[in-house]
Length: 486
Image (cartoon, rainbow, N blue to C red; front, side):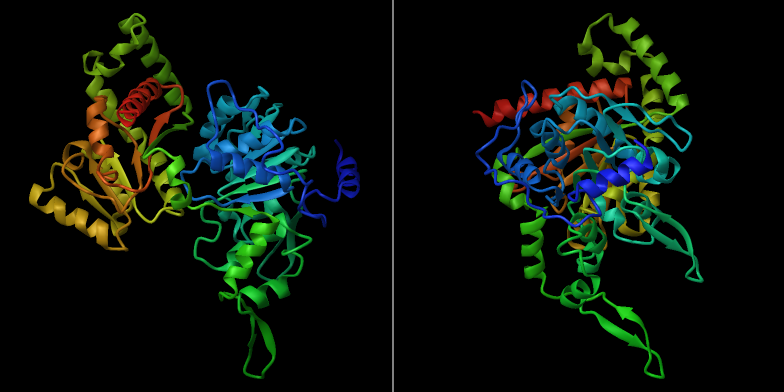
């Protein structure tokens, strides 16, 4: 589709992003239509409600709290609408492989899925294209070569600044230099529907941070008049110089929040808190975060899988007897150290949506490197920390708002400690003894817990570790179901 054809399409379809439109679509009630799911899979009731809300709104902000399955609801929207065939997904880089995995798992249409890798990569000719924020600018032409049926923007709070390059590339706008001269201009990525996801759309609780999202999702309504919005919800006031001349505006304030929330909910936002959906969720939820491997990783992965297949002879049960397979201890440490950088990226992203995080490692070397990065806001618990000091460190994590992370090893922090201030645990690496991992999990999910705990396992995509984690989680989930049914 040529640029002229796209502009003509936009003029003929005023519901597209950047045009004035009514955000309501049809009068379908929640009970009027079925949402297909893959065989053997099903949506939680609140996920069905989220999908139905998005079906009825051209543009939607799904602001459900973290861990509620917003990715699955996104695929469900596509499943619900047969006309959605061409989809663009924009997540942070480390979530690209996860999005591909979840789309393939939940999509009933069997749409092809491709990932854009690097600034010099190939733009895939697939139904679903996944591209991270950081490289949008290198594919400006390709992203605007068609009108997407659905644009999904994950962690959309990253677009709160109008001056950020990623905001310009996704939502369009102009860029000026220090002299206010325009140096770049671009249009929004054209899409018939837009679904934005974020558990914390306003990280600092200021309506100002919502403006870019609102302007994009509801340009003909709440986002139509910046001055009116800023005055009503941001306590807009003029900044004047010594001569009494206006030199600008300040709009960092907070006002009429209940009204703003109500209008957003009516026009484009759905948000459910964990406490509202807790009864529908298991007490423990486990997920795999596949990390895209580099070229060197691919060679090591291929070699490791060949050696394992030769060793195992088709017996997958030896996945939990790995110390007898080659120089396994050395390989585990190398793999753990390889995951330090991705782990830091995941932790930094998750801190935007979580007050406290427990990072559980296997090797102290891995734990120490992660701790060093977050030293000012974390505590470290390894075998080098005297047992009588560990409780004090956990108490600090539990009670001090400035301490947002505890980094520990399974050997030192996997038993005897209570860290229920966190409901998210990240495993950059792990023991292959299921009981050890479950003991570690229970640090944030103790007897009497009334909140769902989320566990994220980081693995290199396609690696032996990924197969091990899949088997581990299956064992754990089966054990939980067996015990819960008693």
